[in-house]
Length: 493
Image 1 (cartoon, one colour):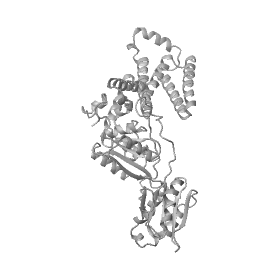
Image 2 (cartoon, helix red, strand yellow; image 1 turned 180 degrees about the vertical axis):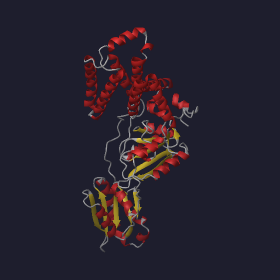
Image 3 (cartoon, rainbow, N blue to C red; image 1 turned 135 degrees about the vertical axis):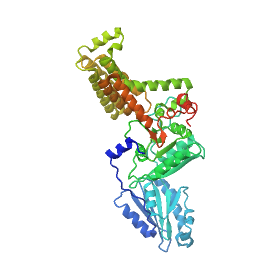
Image 4 (tube, rainbow, N blue to C red; image 1 turned 90 degrees about the vertical axis):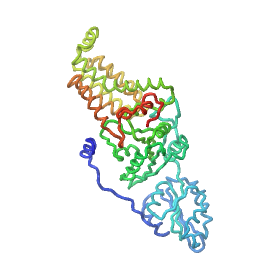
């Protein structure tokens, strides 16, 4: 039965019900295949065709490739030079029934053959070189892809003090090689899915056989096979395509660019989805405690790691709840404050024209806008604006008497707490919870704060990620899995 988030999603976001399927186009012979590809790539500047004469009887061959996606040196070495051995090949009758004879003349280890023109078109768009031969019904394809893009560097979004520094890049083959270096076992399974009817994108389904639950592997495989989408631009698109609700503010998938983090999750029985062209690998299933864990936790001793995880949880509650608690104490329940503190608070708030809720709401809103603006600017300029803007703005509003120093300190502590959360995608969740709790505190005092948190706990307790509870191993309670959750010693089961 669908939960209410899925019902809201279908109500507010009408999804296109049209579905298109891949239809094979059989080979049409040398001239027919060449005419088809020329027509499909009309007005394509980097589309290149080299026609060659095989022998004295007029037999021809055509080498077809896209210049922007291929390596010219590989084409010359692995295709054009070996084609000199094809003279007279098309005249042999057995070549028509045994196309593997033609493949023996090519020096490349990355060879494909097909009789489907749509598949040949897809290989061409992936950087392969297509070979058409007069008298040979089979279409040959040689892997001559170039390697555009950046080299493997350290992660920019998941910095690490200990452990490996390598990060995924946009190149599909490089990312898979990084995983193979970490897990040198034949049990590491890679299954490819081509998603996208207008622009097919390779998605690699990665899991450890015997470690990942068979039921979960089958479920993800079936969902991937049933996805119908026109274009898959980035790995984050897969989250909604797999049926995971995107209306919930809680992140329900792990996105990481660290190979060691993906390796650790695979060893814990999870699966990974590597999307060609995206440096972020999607890891499923995800639990709420995973949002507070980083790879560094497993590279140091148990007690320091336990303390740091506890500090992250404290920082999360400070970032979300501290502003609302300030409003509760100052506006409604000031009598719980010590007597020695009530008088300084009253002095600080004297002359401030706004109630605490308006003070904090305005300050939090302005700083959120400042933070978002600094994020989109170049790194050096953004850091300068963030630091200078924060100091100037804070000093100016206090001197103007618009907010009290205590309100500014509360807002600053709330933002500092949000910086201690390792997953940047949790920042959006923190903002939503912060404003919701602040609104609840202004309306119903402490009862409002408790009501908002109760609604949040009910919501996350009802969440499931592809059938796996979101609050595991806390709910349902699994003592065997609590070792990794608390002491990072025993893997999740």
